[in-house]
Image (cartoon, rainbow, N blue to C red; front, side, top):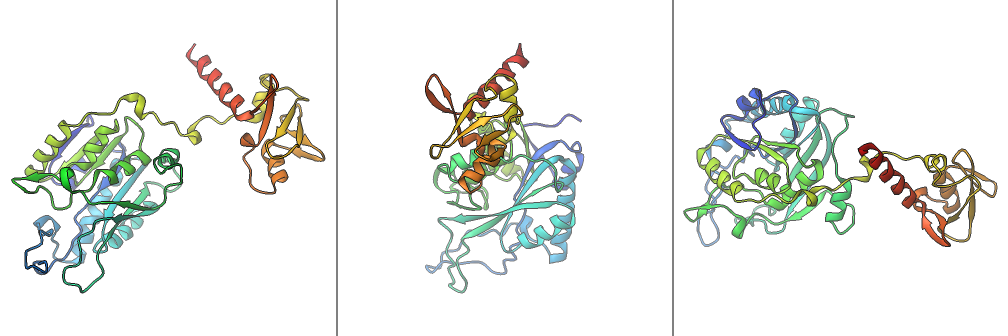
Length: 359
């Protein structure tokens, strides 16, 4: 079966998932029914009725029925995930703990739980509980220990060059972003694009396939298209499919050159000795330690000698600084009288290998 890329498939998510090829998608983002268990209508202090989630698709007769549904769709989702794939599931206190337990029972390995802090949450109108100001996302890999995509550098850059934390302050989808039909919300639980932007940018690469088994208003597909990823949506309701398709059709993908964000950790490892044996540096040449006036001599085997210390660029730098150290960032070489980081030579070596492979 050919994978139905960039399409919204109508039907029951479990049936549709079971019809797709095994091990065919890179990422799943799932926003399943929360089973909110609402007993009565909600009213604001001015007695106006709150437009709460009271749709039939969010109602289950018991926790056991909800657990059974969760088990079935998560099992079907695991079948279509590649062995290197990961899954995100979002929920609230009503369901996320039950979902997490089922995920672990099925062999998913949880990598993070991320807290979505809503900067503009709906207040608790009755004043009998704390305002529910967050939701939880579980991020898990299909198989513990398998290689998976995590674009750490991209997320750090997105966060002003600070490592991205697991608490994300993002407002609800409001204003122009909120889809409306005849003046009312098209979908009661539309997620903000900023939330999916982080999910998709962090855990996929351009051209990857992102599947959403509860497609709803189509936020996953909209962001996937913007970021040059393929999507597959599964949705039961015709009205949501029409609204999501119209939304996605109006989106322009970013140019390819804006989407290539190479991660250093995914690049080919270059031993320091490779620079020596390929003539970028020479045995006997001196390197300057970046902190202070310490010099080291390059040995023929790629080790450095600094006083009585002999070892790798990392080990000698670590002993000199008495702290963890990345040797590529700690040693300078002289070129025409100017001191430069040895990391520049590593990049030149990589570039020469790429050119050699293309020629």
